[in-house]
Amino acid sequence: MRPRPFAWIALALILGPAAISGVSRAEAPPVEKSPDLLAAELARWSAFVAGNTATDDMWKQVKDATAPGLARVEQALRGGHRLLALLRLTSVRENLYASTYLAERTAEQRRDPAAFEAEFHRMGVVLKDELGGSKPGDLDALRPVAVRAMAETAAAKTAVYYHASLDYGRSTTPDSGLYYLGAAQAQRDFIELARRLSPPSGPPAPRVRALDAGLEALQGEVLAAYRPPASVDKHPEFIGISSAIKESRELAAAGATYGALLRYLQAAIRFGVMRAPAPVLDAATLATRLEALGARLGASGVDHSIGRLILEAAQADLEEHASDGKAATASVIASDVLPRYFAALDPSPARPPAEPAKVTVTLVRWPYT
Image 1 (tube, rainbow, N blue to C red):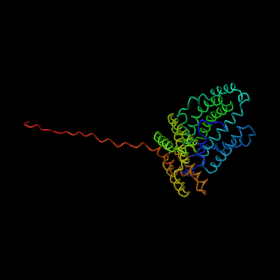
Image 2 (tube, rainbow, N blue to C red):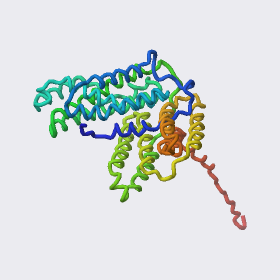
Image 3 (cartoon, helix red, strand yellow):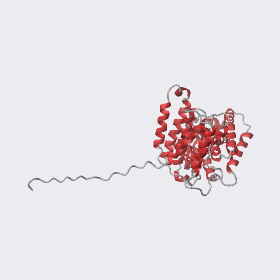
Image 4 (tube, rainbow, N blue to C red):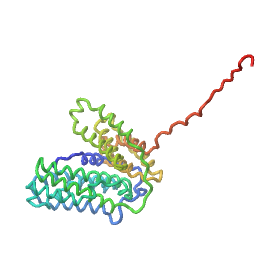
C-alpha cells in the first residue's frame, strides 16, 4: 500500500483488538441518530469491497488490508462496542475512500506529473477551508467527546495528507500522490459523518488538564526502553509510538484537547503491549477490574466516552482471548492506560496554602533609659 507519513492506522488497530466498557450499554449515551448511520456506513463500504472488480496491484493491497479491518468493525458493532467500531472504521474507510478517489481519476492524471499537479491545485481549492486549520470551536458541538476526538484528529490529518501528496507524487508516481489527495478528502468526509452521528445533547464533557506531564513521562519510558535488542527488533513499533506522542503534542498545541487525549492513550496502549513488562492478568481478575473501571466511568454524570472507548477496546480484547489467556491489551488498559485517563482529568495538585508571614519583634530596653 502507499507509504504513510504517520502510523494512524496502526494506532487505531491497536485499539481495535482491545475493547472495554464498564458502563452498561443501556446507560451509555447514543453515538448516532436513528437510523443506524454507523451500520449503514459499514454496509456501504463492505459492499464496495465485495463489488470492486479492479485487478491493479494497488487495489489488491488495499483490499487485503481493509477486508480484515471491516470484519473487525463488524465484530465490534455486533458486540455492542459502538465507539470502538467507529474508531476501527476510521482507518479502514480512509483507505477505501482514497481508493475510490483514485479510481475516479483520469489515466492522464495517474500517469502525467503535470496533470497530477493540476489536480493537486484543484483539490487545494476544494479543501481550502480545511487546509486553513480547523479551529477547536468548529468541532465543540460534536458529541460524545470520543467522536469529537476522532474528528479533531481527522481535521489535523487533512492538511498533512494534502501537502504530503505533492512530495509523494513527485518522488514516486502520480498514483501515490493522488492516493494521498484522496486520503485528505476522506478526513473532511469523516468530519461530516461525525456531525451526522452526533446527538443533539448529552452529558457535559470532562475537563482535561494539560497533558505535558503525562506525555513527558510516557516519552521518558519509551526512551528508556529503546535499548537493544528491543530497539532493533521492534524499531517500527517505537517509531509508531513516538509519532503518536508527537501527534498528541501537536493536537494539544492546536487546542484539540480531546484528540490529543485520545492519541496519548493510544500511544500508551501500544507501548504497554509492546513492552509487556508484567504477566497478563487472568480473565477473572481482568473482568473484575474492568467492571470497577466501568462503574467509575458511569458514576459522575460526565461524558467519559473517551474512557469508554478505551474500555471497549479492553473488553473486546478480553472477549477475543478469554480462553487463551493472551488478553495483553486488556491487561495494559486495566493496569496502566485507564489510570492515565483518570489522571489526565484530575485537577492539578493543589499547592498547600502559604503560611501567613510571621514578624518577630524584639524589644530592647537600653540601659539607663
